[in-house]
Length: 254
Image (tube, rainbow, N blue to C red; front, side, top):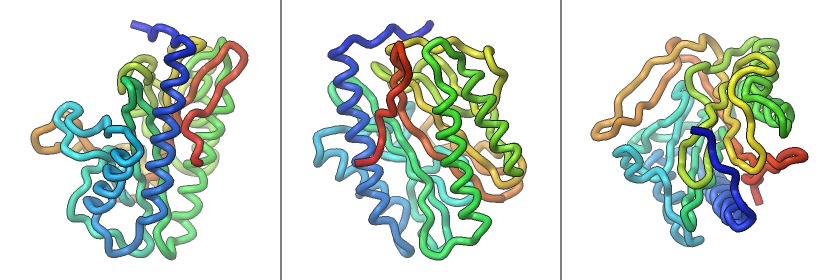
């Protein structure tokens, strides 16, 4: 069922939740360094979330036990924080969702740790540009396929691949809602975008194949994913408010 448009009060609450998510992402990202475990990173993010008056939307979501998703190197998304030790040269995606007053802000960024390879730098830059190109394709009367078409065209021309089965989503009063926002598609196809609703744009860009391996998380129905060939994957994510004249990125870093 399509999202119901947000009213002015709800939009104000979305802006707050999204600013908080951006704050947590920025604050935590600056502290990531070699020698830390992904669990330590998760704890920093959760402490920051609570300090600024929010709560993590991830904890307990379909049994997910941690406050963030942390996906290093070949992990595509939903990586479970644990005892993995961050190394110099890693790329690490940190995905943060903050809940505040019943509304959700969702954002992620791939951080480059220490001296990363030129190949890794190129992939991370391409993933960020792919997200921005997808965002720029958003129009008030548009379709999800418009976003996916431009994203996938750019990624393919760079020699990379996009994950097709996992993507962006509606967000606002609930964590995950319609529409599904894939990183591929055809112009004028997919789901219709509705003004005064929010959704995420979050292409996952792989260095090699777009095929992935699904892994289970104990006690949770949430899965995490790794590239099938073990090559790198990078991702960036913003929450977007669609207006009747354009769009607003709600999760810009402070």
